[in-house]
Length: 124
Image 1 (tube, rainbow, N blue to C red):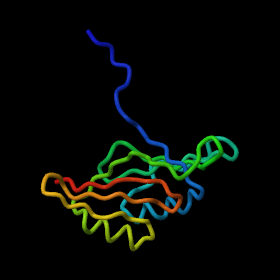
Image 2: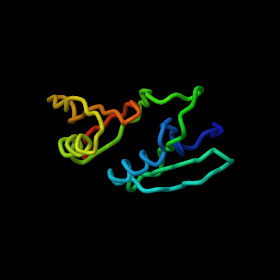
Image 3: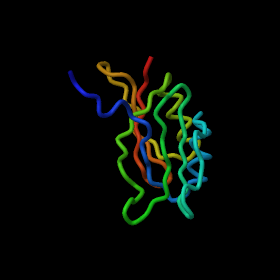
Image 4: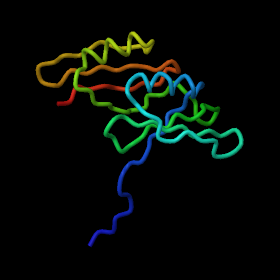
């Protein structure tokens, strides 16, 4: 019998220089605030969640030990990659080329104002 050690992914931390800016931008993408609290003096924990998702994104203050501008590896799903591409560009994210291959769903990469890279793939 296998003993379960980890039962899921609760959150993924993303370092940012301005938590309020990140919160405002991601809320415009449909995310809602799950937790926004100062856990210790000077340490704010900010979690946002996509509609219907269980895993959250935690936007934590960047530091020397946790610099912003990383490739997060986070892949987000959208019902319409073309519309998401336009929306992100309008909101000021840096968006990459919308890839539309015959063998894969439409997808693209984008960067937030801190240079953190994310990916979006169209999912039915």
